[in-house]
Each structure stands twice: as C-alpha cells, then as structure tokens.
Length: 247
Image (cartoon, rainbow, N blue to C red; front, side, top):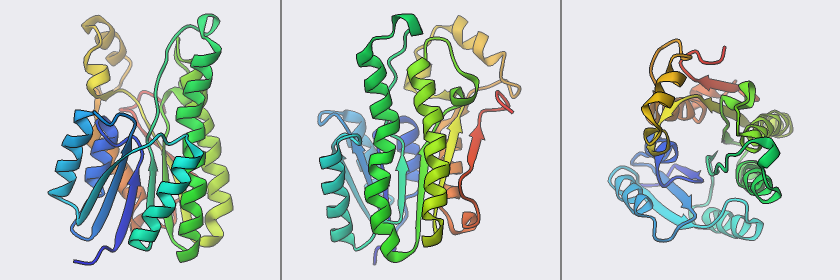
C-alpha cells in the first residue's frame, strides 16, 4: 500500500511520545521516531508496536538538538519517502533544582533539549513541507509554562519558550498552508510520575478539578486532532490537556 502520510515524532520511545506515534500510525502512514539511547528497550518495544500498525516504521538514534544530525536525517527521510507531513516535537528532558542551586549546565541542557531542539527540527521540516504547501508541526509544551513550578525554572522557561516559538512559526508558515500548534499537558501518568511518593501524588491531584491524572493516550488524541485535516483552520494555538489544573 502506498505511503500517503509521513510522520516524525522526536523522543518517541516511551510515554507520551510513544502514544503520539501510535495515534498517528495507520496502513498508509510511515511513522519515524527518534530517541537518544541506542540500547533503549522502550524504543524497540515502540518500534514493534508501530510495525504492527503502520505502513512503515523506523526508530532512529539522534538528538533533536543536534543540527547536523537533524538536518541530515530529516532530508534523508524526505528523499526516501518523497515527503514529510507531520512533525511532533516531543523530545526533551528535565533537570530539576531550585533556581539558586541550578547550574549553568542544567539550564543550558534543558533549554537546548526542550526548546532549541523544536526550533532545530522545525526549520528543516518546514523546508520540506513548504515544497508541498502542506504540513503540521506540533510542539509539546507543559502546564508549567503557565503556572510555573518550584524547582523547574529551566523546564518551565523552556516550555514557555515553545509557545512563543509556536506562534511565530505559525505566522511565518501560514502562507504555505502549514499549521503550527502546541499541546500543554498537565499531570500525565507516565513512568516518571508513577515513581513519585504517594504523598506527593495526592497533594498534586488535590489541585486537579477532575481529580485524576491524565493518560498519554489523551494527550496523543489532542495531537492527532491537530495533525488532521479537521484542524486545518487552527494555528498558533495551545491546547491544554490538564483536567482543569490551569484554566
């Protein structure tokens, strides 16, 4: 069956990235995920799930903030499939500490992995999308971009920066029929949050009006909608998936 849609999801080995990749997979789609660790069992599991669902699937090992790797791999992807339709900038990391204790390295690493990586991949992807005058770019932000969070000055700054980047790219790329939007998850049940002490979990969930954490699949559903034809008249927006934590 011919491939009619090509999707690239950075940081797609597990958690929200995996759910997003699977939500965008279908018999006529090629879904490519990136991850940093060649030995990651999560990436192998995700790839197997994608191969059972998508027309084509790949797991590539490169850092989204590496300009050379991003440029070469995105161009190679377009050369192989003849197109790139959807880019989901999900790659990122957290290095938490109180602002007065935050090292230069931890600031720079998080800003590079979360914010520069999205700009980096978007600029290469946009060149390909512009040729076909169609594209979807979706950036994974966070509720802390709006609320802040103790110990996450670097993380919240990077996620807030993503929203400014989203709006500017939306303005610049709209004439070529490319939409750019963001999704801002709140408390989502992932491997990372599952390991938190019950006291911390309970205290946080008390602040969520719906009284429960969200799921990776609920975030993925929002991303899939923004990547669809039905969302063609939506650009420059942030869709909040947080159970009412931020309104």
